[in-house]
Length: 134
Ligand code: CMX
Image 1 (cartoon, protein in one colour):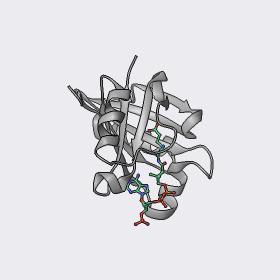
Image 2 (cartoon, protein in one colour):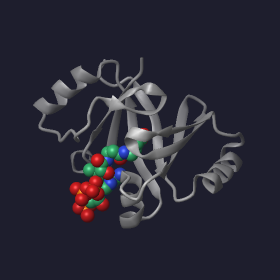
Image 3 (cartoon, rainbow, N blue to C red):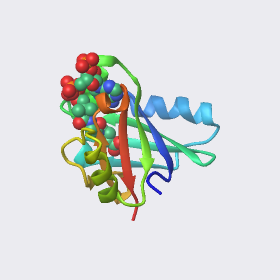
Image 4 (cartoon, rainbow, N blue to C red):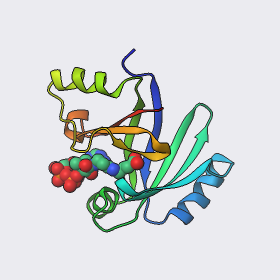
């Protein structure tokens, strides 16, 4: 199996606290957890919705990808993340298909997972994250 499931959908927000209050109301419950991912320069709040999850992301630095995204495009859907059983095997297959894997692939994501991103131009305008969980 190449992709196991959609792991989560990422939403870029300006202010995590107010976004958490709004999504607590929308989902009917508070986030599962908060985390700061130093490597990605973000603070995140993760909400479970059935088997699916929603990740709210706030930049922790003006040079964070989330700060740049919001400057250019405003708040909104930032990425779709697929869970993969084997990140390296996914790279090999995608490189063979000439898809642009962004620098830093294999780095640390939330929960100590290993992550990689595919450029939005390789995803028809959607940034794709791949995650392999320990
Ligand atoms: N979804 C869709 N399009 C996006 C995008 C996104 N998330 N981010 C940028 N773009 C668009 C830009 O608006 C730009 O569009 P135009 O060419 O029409 O202007 C285009 O993609 C290319 O932009 P770029 O100038 O090449 O690159 P940027 O400096 O905007 O960086 C990207 C874009 C995806 C390479 C960079 O954000 C990146 O490396 N992202 C991966 C890491 C990341 O996003 N981390 C935060 C999440 C961490 C987590 O989930 O834990």
